[in-house]
Length: 307
Image 1 (cartoon, rainbow, N blue to C red):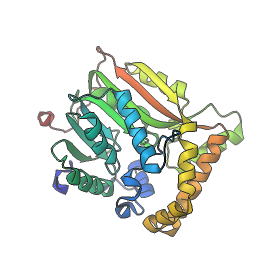
Image 2: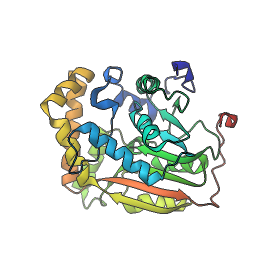
Image 3: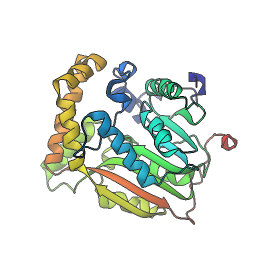
């Protein structure tokens, strides 16, 4: 797979747009990551037998593959695919028919292209540049949709849910790893702290929903069997410990530069504190699109014949 296979051709997002802001948030050193942390960017699932970050990251991906009920005939859309290690993992461990992987950052896609080529999966995994709220795919193109931790940045998460409904076949499954507000803020101070976390992390405040609202939003769109699993204790403390290791801080500073590297560490500290204060939760979400659900009307300029 060559960069010309990334569809559509990567181009800048409009200046001042939310997508451009998220790009600026993540672009620092994005081209320098190489194989640090195995290319994974997720928080990981830190169960008792986990020995290192790459194992934790792989466990999280595997858990989501199980929630999706992936099979050899699955046509999977991976939104916010990052540098692509989870897509290689899913092909190796679940044997899916195909994966279309989309990300906002061309730099991430360049790493993913290399990783996919080295694994020999060019015919199974296709890369796309774009935004999750305007997916460049035809209606009912996929049997499964996956998103690992990108949803919290989408403007908005609700728009992405509608796009999931549109591109999924009836009966298709979703699985997300995401963040939620554990509860509604109790006072002005807690509302201010939640706004601080969302602003630091480039999150639309509308996305700071409780798990209950999250589930209801999906059900209102025609998703059934929606389950929201709160697993913060298995995720956030382990990830923050990993990010606080001096070796990890030094490597991320080398990759991102002194300023961005240190700011990233501060954001991790704020997130860990917000979690311990009961404001933030990490969730896994699964569900199935009802057989009679009606997709959104919008049809993007994608060629459905590619399927």
